[in-house]
Image (cartoon, rainbow, N blue to C red; front, side, top):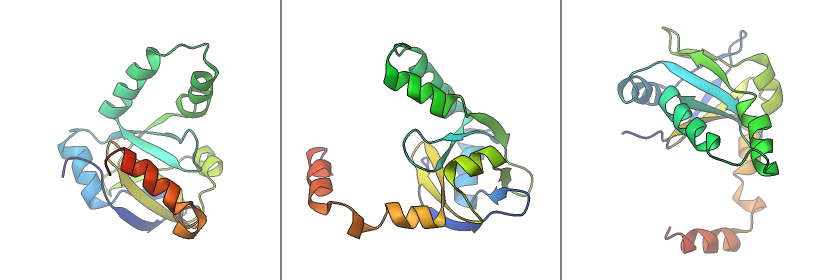
Length: 151
């Protein structure tokens, strides 16, 4: 496995740390050869994103080439780049989720850690359940849109 996949249910410890699931941790240490991650707010969802250092650097390069006067780019810079902080996986496989990030994402003690190819998402369990409830989306519209991409 060379991309982040899977869904894992965990509990935040009293100090605000979570264990990075072993399959995801293995990708970070083997593929990226580094235990450093960038943690940041998601642009539009109420969750957090964890990027391995190499993926974060790619994202920064992409952002640098965008027009800074574009209001969507400004929003992204203010929401995502401004909140980015470097973290590191400790010897027990945990990473600290800073208080500000937990507040911004509404993260309580029960979390869902989700592999998303080049990044990892961290969700509050109740928010994850809400946004992934098939009963709350237009299934036909989503299916049509995905079919247009060949999925």
